[in-house]
Structures are given as C-alpha cells and as structure tokens.
Image 1 (tube, rainbow, N blue to C red):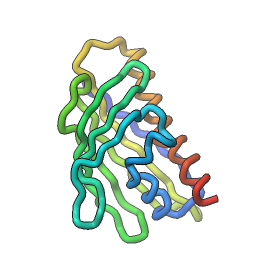
Image 2 (tube, one colour):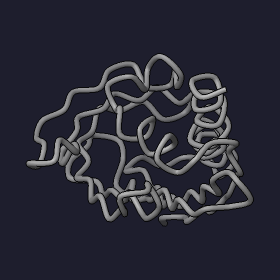
Image 3 (cartoon, one colour):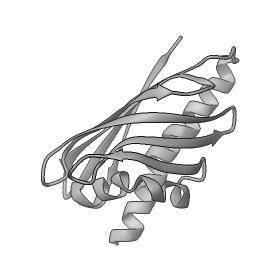
Length: 150
C-alpha cells in the first residue's frame, strides 16, 4: 500500500535560488548521495526537465526509474514542482512535489511524497527508506542552497 509523507523546512534563501537547485537535477549526486545517476530524457522549451531517469540507492530501496516532471512555478520561484513515476523495476509508486513559498525572508519548502514498492518489505525498512529520501529532499537541499547563496 502506498504511503504518503509530508514534511517542511525553511531555507535561508529566496525561492528562485531554491528552485535553481531543485531544477539542476543532474547535480543531485553531488549533494544527495542516494542518487547515483541522473539522465535528462526530455526538456520543455524553457529548459525545465520534463522526463528524467534516476538511479536511487536509499538503503532498502534500490532502483532505476523514470519520472515525469511538472513545473508550475512563478517567475520569483514560488509554486510547485511535482513528479510522477512513469516506469521502474522495484518502485510501484513514487509521486511527489516540492512546494515553495515565501517565508520571513527565506523560503518554506514543503515536500510531499507517496512511495510504494512492488516487493514485500517490512514496514520498518520501508519507513527507513522514506526517511532517507525525505531527509535528503529537505535537509540536504537546505545545506546545498545555503552553501551556494550564503
């Protein structure tokens, strides 16, 4: 059964700077070591990645999968970057979003994730994999953005 997780963090940078790091998918392995390989398969006319192949090694979940991205963002960087799973071997669902909003001189980033796997997995292992993905998605994102802007 797919489980949905939501968490938020405030980053000391404007939404545009946060969005720039999120959009630079090919650099994820530099700050998110769980991603071992990223390949942009298609981009729209604005240069936003539309379809991406990613290889993930998040402890209990190892897979190479393809995501479709939707970039519903304003010029200032606020808005939503969402994705849904197109194909995978181990994963059955990996749908999520980053929601970026202005927050006291910085950016509040809310991360939503729905994940499910095809193979039976103990709940404890699945939650550990989710925690790794969410920690990377927020804490490592915060470190990366603030190191580039600070």
